[in-house]
Image 1 (tube, helix red, strand yellow):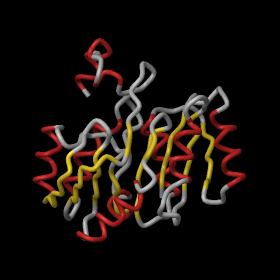
Image 2: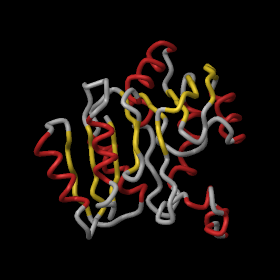
Image 3: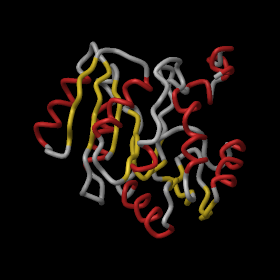
Image 4: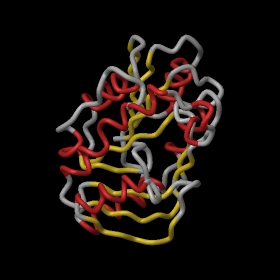
Length: 215
């Protein structure tokens, strides 16, 4: 199950959607949650759903990122779950790469690299080792894209439905509850950093607020 939340991204959503539809691994469901968009994002998602039966669009009232992602989690039926953001894009073998990494090492969580974090190395970690690596933020960070979770693990948790940065509150819990974490740092995903991006502060510290720092 690929879960994507969208909100007012009519100029960017098509690139994200098509990057999933063009995956080498074809057997997936694509859940797009329209989080109360007031532009054409939801309409564009509906048009894609009419063309591809793997897409399911859910329109909901505006909520925070966590509330929107929870909507996707509640209906996800795949054995594995991954998230992408509506302003990013995935390489064609993104799903296949993560799926094989998880199966090969019997890992609850599989992690790939991103265009800004590329390390051609494979590491199989215990939960403790994965958490230490998370705190270093060198090979990967708390963002949910670039990570594949077994559904049985993901369903133990829900995102917080208040605050701005849902991933900070949940990622460490998922890693801590996993049996093992398989990481291979080849870049299979691109985070598109721009001023309207929720994580713009990671590259421009002028956007960092005391509230973000506290979270």
